[in-house]
Image (tube, rainbow over all chains, first blue to last red; front, side, top):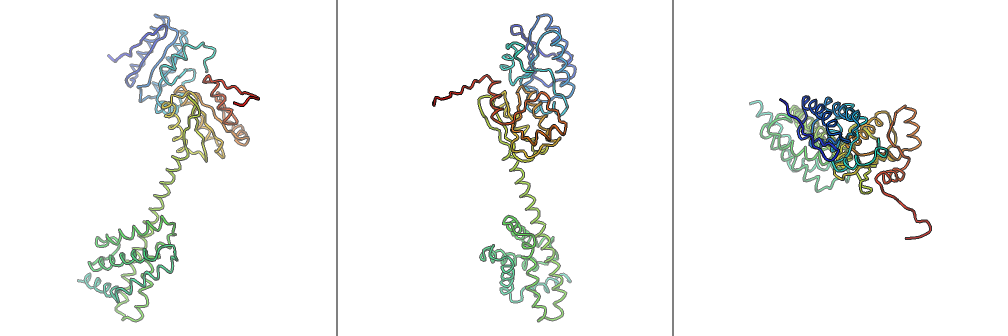
Length: 123
Length: 283
């Protein structure tokens, strides 16, 4: 039984706070749970906080993009917040630019980004 | 037994009018170095070295790497390090050792034929010492160069805060992988530390951009975007603009500005700061 990452609800936004280094199975579970939750709670936005994440591999990087794409299909905007410099450099070196995923420096700025209307959101 | 004899011979050679030899050595070296080293300092250095050398030979040292030579090596190393730092050439440094041979030469003419083998042995030892000097000199120079390169790396990548939430990196000089790596890390760390959402990379001081440099810039910008910050590249000269287009490098989705002022204006507008020019009224 691999661990599951808790998904919290604030208004119509879902907050995923990643506190441990991610294993492949954990990420797959998260993808399923999150899709279920978005539908069940008709969420408008998803924030994935990875400020505690120190190590990523190409699988986790790709899954972040996949999760964002799935959320978009379910009409919820995804913002990845708090990525560390080392993680950002790793992803870039791996050739993963996470196109289409919004990012913000921290949780507060991520929430602010979601509360802005879609049109003004920078791509 | 043979070794003892050797040592005795060498000693005989060196202790021939003891003080005199050292003084002649100092004079010889001083002549070749000119006035760039203080005569008192030179005198002290060489006399110490001479004493150490005589001591080492007395203990039966056969070449530079003998254990008995350790003090001589230490003194020589210090001498060549000083010379390297003061900007002397390798030959000027090595001459300090080789001059001793020249000082000994006249004594051969007056001495007996027995002294010739002893002189040759001593010459070999001195050659070894000379090489050792040059090695130390080169090593010191290498260390200096490495240290300076590191300093340059540190100096040339400052991250400055232009406004609340706006930081800039003015890049000066040629960019290579190592430098870009440092710039990237510093910039990203500064984004976290200052909580800035706008970053400007100013390349006014970069003389040329090739595909590799452009690649590095792109990586930095994508990494910053991953962290939730927006990057603008400014200070693109007409020349560089032409090069980038000619090389076919895609700067897709990256905002580029000709001057830092334009980039700052854009960054301020993006972070919601309005600037109003008060024409005609001085404030």
